[in-house]
Amino acid sequence: MKLRLFAMLFLGAFSFGAQTLAQETPSADGAKVYFVNLQDGAEVHSPFKVVFGLSGMGVAPSGVEKAKTGHHHLLIDRPALGEGSDGADELMYGLPADEQHLHFGGGQTETTLELEPGSHTLQLVLGDMGHVPHNPPVMSEVITITVK
Ligand SMILES: [Cu+2]
Image 1: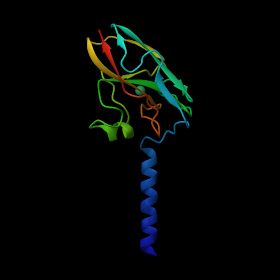
Image 2: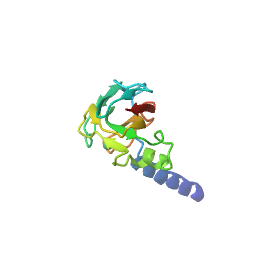
Image 3: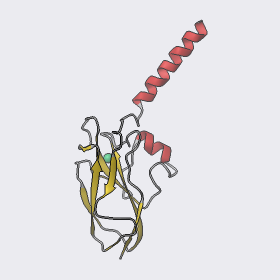
Image 4: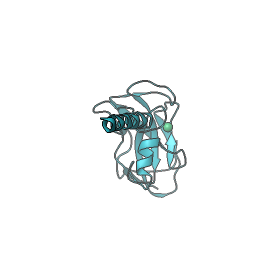
């Protein structure tokens, strides 16, 4: 009996702890992000415009807590979300901000990119107010483009 109570308290503490961690912001069923103006295999001249599409959820600036919203992130020249060496961490704690992870925390829905000539990969990922992917993540396919 005593042991059972302890186990319940332990499990209770664990689940509380898990909730305060991330990937707890639910996405909307069927939500999608996508590239409006670029397809896999596209050839572009730098600088070029990238337009972000979102359906089934809304765009909100980072730091704004509102259900079923998020802001865009553009992942450049790296493995698909969740598949790199930091895959588990980025799903749990959020995306870094560097030249491979652009945040559009103002709620922007497009950008202009300047990339070196050659082949590059791009992926769009929606993040919550704290830059953490939703659960389940709302992300585009990884597309490969060639910059002429
Ligand atoms: Cu962000």
